[in-house]
Length: 80
Image 1 (cartoon, rainbow, N blue to C red):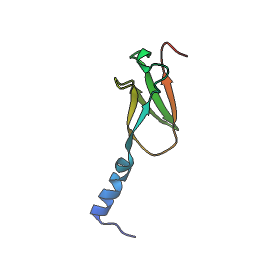
Image 2 (cartoon, rainbow, N blue to C red):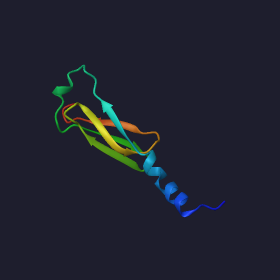
Image 3 (tube, rainbow, N blue to C red):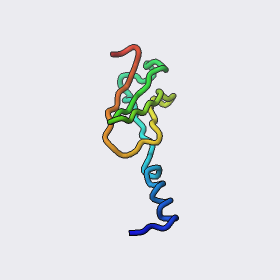
Image 4 (cartoon, one colour):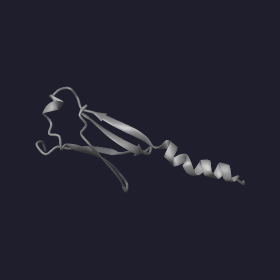
């Protein structure tokens, strides 16, 4: 099978098109506004790590996440 230049260029962009954002929401109970501002979350997979700070909307937004299986961890200095 032979690809033209245009097809090859589109196939090269495919991983970028599959990348997306992932938002983790904190539950309303206990009060999410009591969590320190320096709280952050990480997504981990085999050789891939993403980090996101706590937003003012009490969410963690990860950008450019490719499809796959990830472990999410929330790191809060006041809670173990």
